[in-house]
Length: 338
DNA sequence: TTTCTTACA
DNA sequence: TGTAAGAA
Image (cartoon, rainbow, N blue to C red; front, side, top):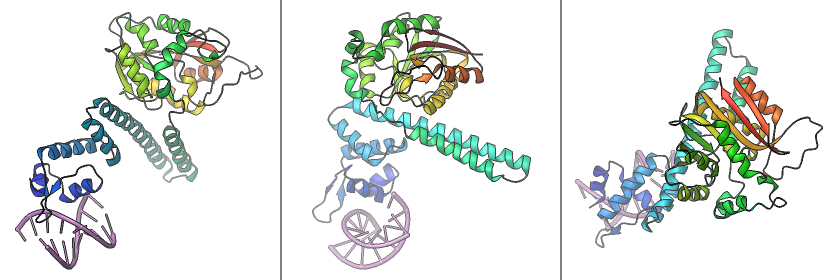
């Protein structure tokens, strides 16, 4: 097949095809006489794949590696690329939501004041820019990919001196499950599910669970352990689910990886995916009280929330809250969306 | 007529 | 990636 047939068949432009070749995504043979490109079925298939991946917003570089993986029969990688794409789309969706809200704010100001007060504009613009940056600055700083395989052993054989972070791990998990005490037929979300240890508590009693984690390797382990659990790549700041999807949201030993600013966004996100009257239960390392309390160092990339801040947030957002303390840092927080 | 390459937007 | 120009 020559280039024009392809162009019509897949309705694209010849320039695009040559461009893909230039970028090394395809490499059709050329006729010796006139240098015309000749396309095989294989190449048509590749082109179709490129178009499809393009359609979901993947850039050419990523498509190239995805294609290479698929050549090697590695469909896991492709799945990862698609999930990454999906989670990015959720980030963008939220950004748009934010921008819409900002615009609405400006429209309201315009209506009320007949003019745009500069301070208001500035505030709204700054606000949305800040939110955008907070989301953009999210990264895997913790190398969970590298720790995925050994993670379960680490939490199983705790050396409390070396890993004070996971002290009372098992107790915390079962406490969360107990607190939520899910009804048959309910659907729950485990944020930062890792290898699915918390979700497993619910799965064991026949509850449908979805898990979100930012580490693909953690999710791989999780899928091995719980093949029937739905897992998605994503993060706390742009939960890859639509609004009002879950009866309850849980999370353990993960929230403290967020900065305080990110925590606010994250709570907002949990609220978004939670059904009306949904429940939320967090097990995490939290400073309990008083400013003058001696706060143990949280370590790099860790930000223990203050209990008071959390309670305030829940209060302001119409949640009923209860909490209990497991050890000096570890708390279980239970909030119900009224 | 068709496609190719190259340069530029 | 689109468009334009010159060549095979």
